[in-house]
Length: 369
Image (cartoon, rainbow, N blue to C red; front, side, top):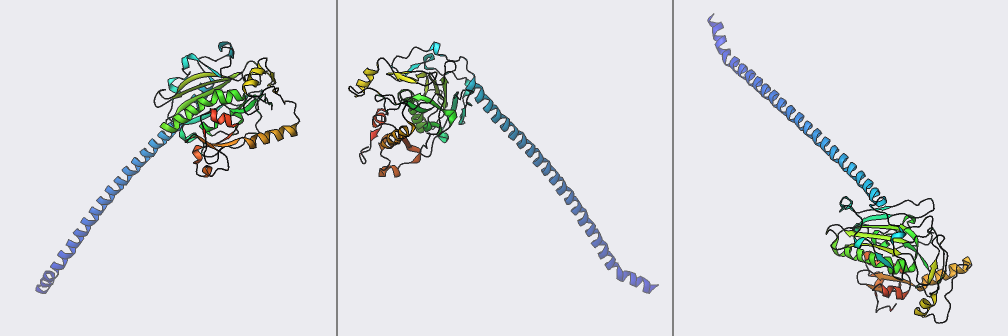
C-alpha cells in the first residue's frame, strides 16, 4: 500500500502539469475562437459597408447618366424651341448694313440653358437638304488644335459657283460655317455649312465670331452660342442667320448679343429660292468702289466646269494665308514664322489680302504677304 501511495505522490506533479497544460490549451482555444468570431463579424460588417458603398456609387453613376441624358434633351429642346421664332417679316429690309440688332441685343436663352460644361449640337438636314439651328456651349476644349482642312466637297443647298469682279475674293458665295471653325473645330460638317455670301461671312458673321474666340482665349470661360438660319418658305438659300451669344460664368458681362446677319451682297441681286443671281441696279457703284473702273462685273455662272475649277485653284493658290490669332499677324504659308506658331493660334485662311487686313490682322514683316 505504501508503495502505491509513493507512486501516486510521485506522479502528482505530472498530473498537475498535464491538467495545467490542458486548461491552458482550452483557454487558448477559447480565446482563438473568440478572436475568430470577432474577425468574422468585422469581415461581415466590412463586406456590408463595401456593398452599401457600391450601391451608393451605382446610384450616383445612374444619376450622372440620367443627368447627362437630360442635358442632351435640354440642348435639343432649346436648340429647336424658342419663346419666339424669328421671321423675315420682323426684320428691316436690307439696306447695305451687314446686320441689325434684335431684341435690344438680348439673346433668347433661359436660365436653365446655361452650363459650365462644353457641348455642341447641329440639326439634321431637312428634306430640302437645308441646315437647321446649331448651338454650342463653347469652351477652350472645343476650339481647334490643328489647321483647318478642305471643305470644298460640301455642296450646301442652293450652292452656285459665281464670280463678280467687285466682290472681295471674286466669289459671291462661301461655304459658310454656322458656328465658325475657330470656335468648335467643325470643318467639313454638312450640318454646319450653308451657302452664304462673302459679305455675310466676312463683314457680318466673322466680327462676332472673333469677339467670342478672343473672349474665351483670354478668360477660359464658356459662351452659350446659337446660330439659326432663317429661310422663307422652301427657299434653298437662307435670307440670313440669327446669331445669339452670352458668356456663362460672368452672366453676360463679357459677351452678350443678338443680331440678324443678312445673306446679301451689295451690288448683287440674289434669288434665295434657287441661289441664282445677277447684277443689281446699283452694281456700278460697288464696281467703282472696288476699283473696277469701266470693267463690267462679270458673272461666270455658266463657265465650263474645267475652266471653273482652274479659276478656283488659281484663286486659292494666290490667296492662302496663315493667320496667327494670338499676335494678329498674317503670313505666307512658306514663312518660317509659321513653323514656330502654336497650332491653337494657327488659322489657314483662303481669301484676299484686303479681307485679312480688314479683319484687323497686320502683315508679317519677315515674309511681307
